[in-house]
Length: 370
Ligand code: OSB
Ligand code: MG
Image: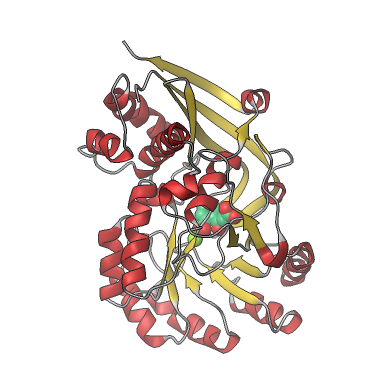
């Protein structure tokens, strides 16, 4: 395929409710949407950066500049038949994984469309529905959290993840277990704790949590191995895993028993598949994380989550849990038994609605070959 045209858009979408974590409060989601055109086909990708470097060191501005200066010039005007060829063209550039993943998704989409197959099929997916859950932000009080979780359970979500932060942790787990003794429940600390907080996590062992996500620092692997030794509950790493090499370190050091995969955090679907395959061989279950994506990123997440070792429910919720109106049709909805259907049409399998995308665009830039 001849890569004829690329377009990037700085987009800003208002969340239906604010999302508070140990990192801060988000009211809007700032991402970069990527469009690639070649041989009469269009591919879409979403770069899951944020306005500030809180979750990751990347931001909308850093990803914009790396796309503009490095990644787009590497592939524009080239003939590309396989995603590996594009990755080889930009692999000399270090880091900036979210920037790479956004462009990579658009290439996967357009190349899947050229073959007339779904993105899920092209990635190696084997399921037509994937198990999903919902990630619930910090609330004003334990009672407010119980009410919020009750509402999500009523909507049909069968797995609840709550955010925790120092001083807002054990009491939340206790309050939820009092009201909902049987639900699938897990917690996410987003790196807010230190090894000296081990007693808090040990106390959580009483509450049958599926996992404790990223308790310690965002690049740490070693201290997590010390903490995991003290706990019955599995630790799951999110922020610390940027590559299959990190996954190997985490598993070999016994820092975690579960890994969260987000294509943006690891540089794209190709690296995600490598981590998935490594974990499958090591009998480490994986699940799909989320970055409050629009329908474009969500379509990619659902496709990737259809691979066989994504055995735990993902942070993949219905479009309406995030946004009043998604920018794709059909929007993503929650199906029976807390599952979501994997799109079956060519590529990402959903259609981007141009005027909705336009409405959320803050600025855009286009690049043409030759
Ligand atoms: O740590 O999983 C996380 C959102 C933004 C940044 C980091 C995280 C999250 C979530 C939201 O938990 C998951 C979702 O998209 O539903
Ligand atoms: Mg997380």
